[in-house]
Length: 241
Image (tube, rainbow, N blue to C red; front, side, top):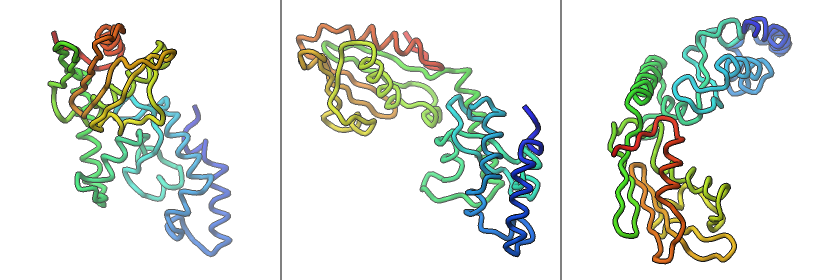
């Protein structure tokens, strides 16, 4: 893979000629929103993500966005890559906005959040996303018992969503459409039925730190075994005996 400055050279030359024709003297003389729509920025963004093998620099999700650690001219012109990092949308959002959904302005604060998240994910790798499963009559309860800060990266809601999708793709289970994560939070939950007969088998509800699967009395599908098999294949998830 060629260095960033080589990869962006043609786009940079075209960009500079274009802004000179418009009376600008540097990249700082054009609106940032316009800069983000240029071929130069697209080339920089693509290079950064590919240089990270398409993975977020914090977690293991796919990188979809590029975050600026600085806005210096060399960084904006694609002459230096140290001020840029590829992130997934979720991690980028955690850096850009605080808990009150106010946008952070300070680059120093954003860098501190970036480093904190990277440190937390390293701990997640080491400790795992620890859950316990309890069976009570016709109910399967899963509870998260680990570090609450890890819920920034993985949630029981997202696990339940992926579990249901897997059931739909690899078994005879079906669910009402449209289907989204928000339905798992509703009081009615998500009803799973047999695809051919439409017979109700279970209802699934989920919150960030828990999953509840209520089975019908006539349910013959091995939901507990399927759930345990699913969790065993999920990276970082650890089922505690």
